[in-house]
Length: 159
Ligand SMILES: COc1nc(N)nc2c1ncn2[C@H]1C[C@H](O)[C@@H](COP(=O)(O)OP(=O)(O)OP(=O)(O)O)O1
Image (cartoon, rainbow, N blue to C red):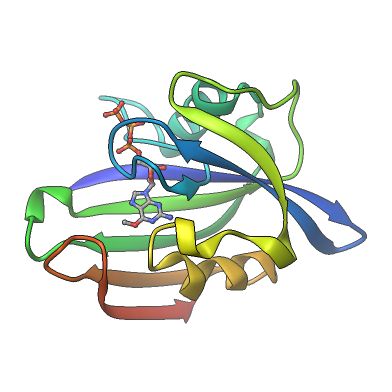
């Protein structure tokens, strides 16, 4: 099993999140799906350092480690292919430098939180992303079906 990160840049009005930056993955794991920005930890790298690096590499935004707001941890389980099993630390990002841009890995765009393209995202996202966008910190497990796409089980709790 490996560890990964996921950053969700958001724009707020007052305390509520109004917009989220998503990217359509152009290659690799999750190709063709909309997601936040992140990836595997490199050897010796901390979770926050990996999150900052992947955010910059995948959408061009530069954030400080201390500006990553911890939002939860999920375990993604693929019973039909245990090599895919991984945990993901998830962060909201409200402050950064730079402008989002298309990269080799991602086509980026802002979405209203009322108009998130869940049908074009990983099947588990609709069960946990709304909670994070509503301000909850989550923990949980998403178990995928044998086709590695559909869902077998979703268990999400507060921290
Ligand atoms: C399976 O369900 C998932 N749902 C969501 N929303 N996000 C997921 C899921 N599984 C993985 N992710 C996230 C975690 C990472 O942010 C990316 C995957 O990153 P990748 O495996 O491509 O990591 P890289 O280090 O960028 O890849 P390379 O090995 O190609 O460098 O998706």
